[in-house]
Structure formats: structure tokens, C-alpha cells
Image (tube, rainbow, N blue to C red; front, top):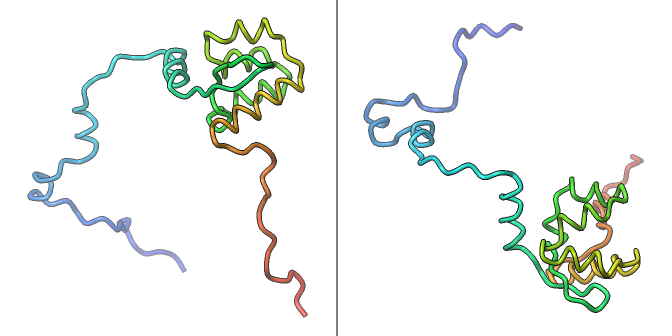
Length: 141
């Protein structure tokens, strides 16, 4: 059976002149916003990172790091690809990156550092438990 309607149906009420005068549309409100100065991606990342660091121990030295829960997926791909120095440059506080290079941690020490950072941030690391198994039987009897 074909649809014989010629006008699309909407759930919104039509806007009356009185309603329009009282409530400006969101488009009008967005257009009246004050222009903010443009910030480069690097500056935005730096601003975000500065306010989010926690301190964790790397080979006995206190190093500031962005908590693991705040890491972007693109950053984690660097780590997964073995680009640990590039990953560290992003997640460590800029003032602590040189200390990281000096320490030159082993993989085990780096893992302990990440675990400590997660603990300091109140986050748990590890695999998720995954979805709960279904309470229904899959086979009908």
C-alpha cells in the first residue's frame, strides 16, 4: 500500500508569531554568540592536559601524567604500535618528558607507572568483564 500523504508529518507544533517573539530559535541564538579567538589544536591539547595531570612514580621519580581514562584513542594507537616515546610526549606533562627520557624505563617499569597513574586517578586498569551472559536459554525445548 502506498503512502498517499503529500506533506511530511512532524511532531512539532507550528511556530506562531507570538511564540516566535517570546522564544528565539536556537539558530538565531547561535548566530548572536560572541566570536571567541581561535585556538590551535596544540594549544587546546596543552590547556586540556595542564588541568588534568596526576602524579605517579616512574622508577622512584614523581612524574605528572594525564590519567589513563582521559586518553584519546589516537594516543592509545601510538602505544599499541610501539611508538612509546611519541605516546609519552602526549600523555606526560611537558616539563616531565625530559625526565622520562633520562630515566629510560623498561617496559615493566613503564607498565607499573601507568598502573600507578590509574590508581592515583581512581581508575582501574585491565580488561572489562564484557557483557553479562543472557539469562535466557538459547535453545527452545
